[in-house]
Amino acid sequence: MSLRPSHIVHDLTGIDPAKFCADNPWVRAISYDRDGTVTDYHSAEVPEEHLEVLRGFARLGIKQGFISNAGSAESAQAVDEVAEFISDAIGAEFISVTSYKVGARKPHPVPFLAFGGKTLISMANTVHVGDQWYKDVYGARMAALGGAVLVARYGKGDDWRVRLLQRPTIELAARIAMGLPKLTKKFSPTLEEI
Image 1 (cartoon, rainbow, N blue to C red):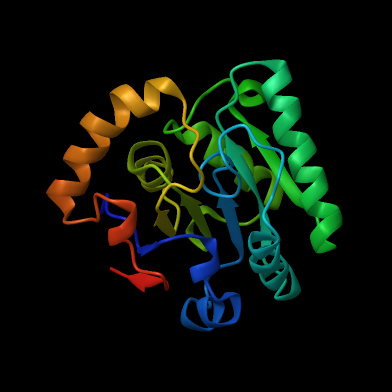
Image 2: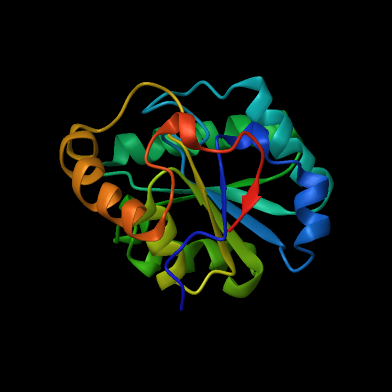
């Protein structure tokens, strides 16, 4: 099993839904990390250009939603509210799975499996998109998802533990070992298969 992402891209706007689905016809569901991928850290604001990508996948019949680490009922509720907003904005259900509700945090496979339980799509036909190798790519690979897209972190906010502990140690070491971009500006503006 590879622990590398299947794709890398600067941000969601570099993913063309029609091309992605044509190149990966096996994909039936896509999960997303919330903070640093779809929104800035703990933000309820979803950029219109991100919504347009999500709409594109919805039009193609791809099931989508969040898999987010949320440490409290309040933060889980905030994730649910953003998912509800996205559902309305894209005209399709946008699922919400939080670590608080399923009792395990990414990279543990449980949140990924819970997402599969909600979509009723096999792990092999699901892709996860996130900004952290450890929680998103490693987690997706450990849960046997068909693919994992690593994006550069979106926004300026970040959890202090991630910013001060995870990114300078685990993230940096993994990216160096795998030849992945270390800096945001080094990510390709368009989706790149690796």
